[in-house]
Length: 131
Image (cartoon, rainbow, N blue to C red; front, top):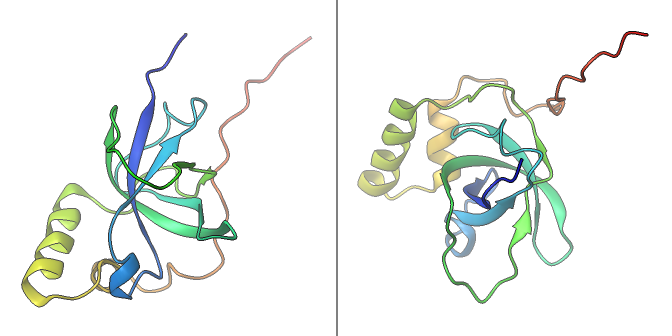
């Protein structure tokens, strides 16, 4: 089965400075496309050294914007189900535009406390083979 290319708009969790306080485009690998959803946390390579960072998916698209940067790929899904609902995402957009705060700060306000600790990536269920 062939999947169309999928791209995710992702905000990096620590992005509180103006230069990186914006959604970045990442490619979603074909094996993750059936599982990826808006509102999930993911691990993505970020910066010149491609350190893995936590990001929040703000949107998904089949097309990507032209950019002067190389598009990197999402590495892992952290949450099986989205942490952020459509209503929470709208609230985040409102907080950012009305109060002029960063996306990361607005996300921190919306999420329950305790979600920034050690994160274990979600694993796809493996099909069992009985012999």
